[in-house]
Image 1 (cartoon, rainbow, N blue to C red):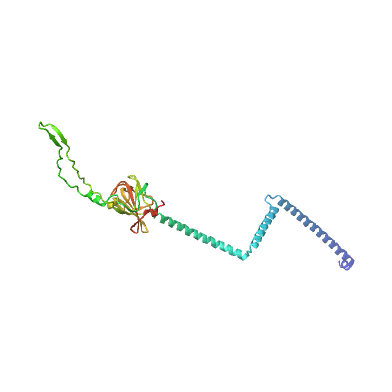
Image 2 (cartoon, one colour):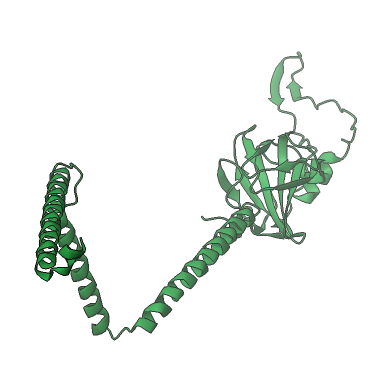
Length: 302
């Protein structure tokens, strides 16, 4: 062995053989790995090409191009209007603030409209029954003079009945009637008052001519503060609507509500009639403001 190693020529031949063997093994290993990578690449290509949900890169490219074009147009428009990025941020903040402001204003006005509707329901609007106005608010000739009322209410005076005078008959000596003179007429004075001048009175409401027993509706929402007989008004209903407003309904034939009842607008509260000091079936209607009669036509669209 020592002899073999001591010979340089033999040693060089041996090293060359080892190097050739190593080189040949390296070539084989390289070839094997290269073939394996090619097979994997081919398999992956086939797998990708056979997928049904693969991405359409061309369509994506077109969409991105459209987005880019839109952004460019928007930037050009903003630049033409001298709107900077700072102004855009301000506008965005203002839009949010404006949205909140508008929402608050909407709620405010909605509540305002609801309050207005509630108040309008407490205002006596329109005529409370079917019919037409036969007598207006203000000065008018008294349809039932006060003196007539007193005399009509007084007890009739008893008078002694006297025999009616007979006709004057003239006869001749034989007793035959030759002439008959009618008895003088006696004017019998009836129990009526003498004629008097027209009396002027202040009419505190409206008279609405309507058939007997017609429905009488509340002109507004409120609370009944009186229901019963009230002097010359006869059967009467008074409704308080708040804010110093009240309505009166007189000469009724039937009352359908009671004191302290809460009533709605247009609710039937009574029926028209001819009770109290009345010349015929009708509804007497008054509107009061702070206990003072006012013209009901102020609340009507006539």
